[in-house]
Image: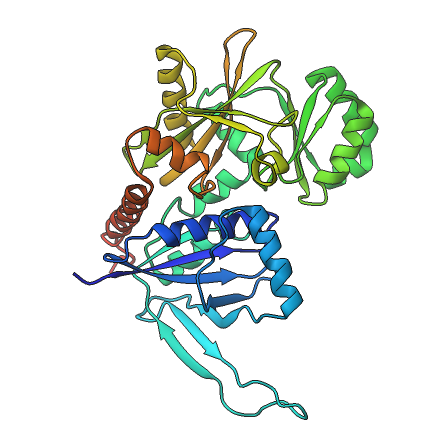
Length: 388
């Protein structure tokens, strides 16, 4: 049987670069070599695409940070220049090897260009310029099958403000929030602070609208905290979401898998090592606890699974998503937080662990996601592109 060439795109121009590298390392390691040939495609932090000379091996964001530091100290070249071809054809990626400059003048020899055909692409890009529909749009132009949500689902899944609008339209349980743009905050910070105090009450969470992995997120307990939190969040995005905190909340997550008939996993629970599940608690320390399956009653499990599937459908998702909730210990109410269309994918990440607890192994999960990508692509090929 011919092996499928799987292009694993990772890294990217976002604050979640290191998490992406760790996720890709795990996926490549667990691809069945009897069925798949992985092609590692790395996007550097400056946006350059390279065909990696070797697959990433770091299994955590902390390991990636250390590895990058060592590479920088040794001046290691990242790999061969690569370009995704934005039109259908046999060569999905062009690899370019340019002549090395001499000590006196730049080399004038011709570059060597090679084509690489891919059967399917697995984008493992967390955050902007990858999870937000940008790379998905490029893959659509190239007419290549790819894992995960399409352009619309990816874009909506990245923008927390638009996502909440769609949740509300589907009557899903969303807590009180405000959306603030950079010019609005610059012009009327005091007025916005009063609105937060009067309408949301403290504490609140302040989040960049278009980022994940808790990058740039702060918990504000006063107006002074809010100003500091806004200053941090605005370093990462021009649109900020301010959410009322759910009192005495448990953090519940649920994994969804499928296209038109999605399934939900057993839910899991995060017990953060810090006041909330920030970037450090997720990736840089080992003190947070993960409980899978979460200690929930049967009715609560069914409701979390139902809401997860409804949220998945509300944002026009496909393939996979992790849906996050807050469960109030005070009144038992479930609050929908957000959908993550490309969740963390290391072997210790919640998405694969929840499916493992539901009877689907890590390798089998990868197989299923690739199959879903191929099925979705085949269905799209049946559509007409011309009226003649």
